[in-house]
Length: 167
Image (cartoon, rainbow, N blue to C red; front, side):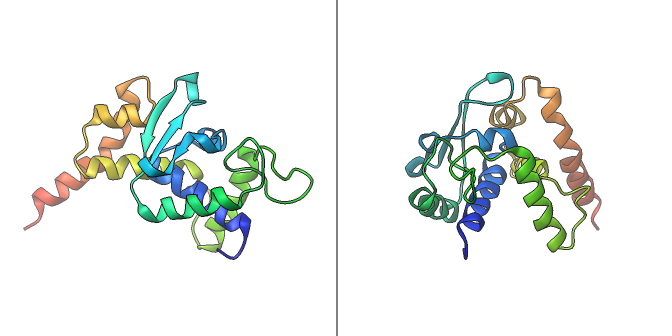
């Protein structure tokens, strides 16, 4: 990463994608909430105030997070503001959405459809495609009702149809 902001954003997006975190959950994380040795994330300030434990899978993300933890500005949050007067303070979801939109536009994608929440959807869809039980995915995503998690099954159903109808 060429900049501290770039490293923070790479770690933040990686964790949202690999652990299926909501943007507010990721931005509320404290440094102690991510245990690198176990690839474990303690989501203590999630939607509905229900704590849960999730995991991420890549060694690359662990390496990036370790580097980030060493270089991040002091403050309460794992992913704080890194520049200006607010340095070390809470990064707002609005500010990160604006940054994310810039990445999406530079990639030539539609910012109307590619949002930070798509990272979470992608995580859930990939878990389903790997054969993970829907109930496990429900717990990982922090959904209260299984019906909320079931919205991801339509993508997998398309995979099944395509695979079974292939000549």
